[in-house]
Image 1 (tube, rainbow, N blue to C red):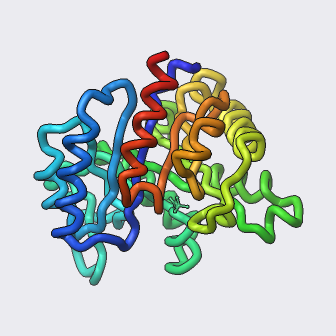
Image 2: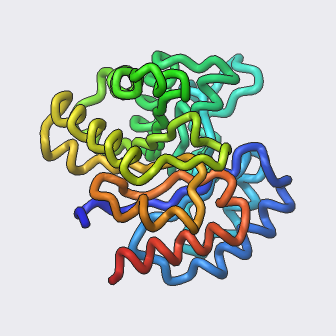
Length: 257
Ligand code: PGA
């Protein structure tokens, strides 16, 4: 086990109404009491943030957003600013999720601007990278991930870089039920860490937390999480149900044993 503080993060995507989100967050706040050895984040939709904030206010769960824009205010119809998220006690923000990249056309350059703004405003950026099935089959996994990491981190100092959390999420594993094997995931995580050594230095690379995401469930979590360079998980489907509590229990057991 490394010295890195592990993370369990739930990405609720476009699920749960504000009311449903509040009910579920109440349940989580009760069930996750005492899990203090790692960071727990939940990322509801924007319209549920305020209610969820209230529900988890006296718990050890932290609030995350699923996206944000890089300006504080202005004529950006439909966007949400960091300043707004700050007021709602949001402490982390998922950036560059593959659904944002693919469906909403977000580029590496735009994501880099958001990462910089997030750091500047004191958020923990949960910065997502990952290859598609086609890219993996063509042997391009490392090249794709390297480009995403280099461009996402462009212009970041060593001190800034250390605050970024990377989520490696192979696109072919997201929401498909096809999870990467622990070996496949560890291979890319180790590659990212070596890349960070080249881009910065060993200490920086050892500090940065790298999460795995893509069809994580209580059934496959243990095998992934015991791998050397896997510092936790970004969970979609399994974060919408009781299984999120089970994931926290598994993480706690591995860390505290
Ligand atoms: P999944 O989603 O766990 O449903 O595969 C993960 C994610 O997209 O963050």
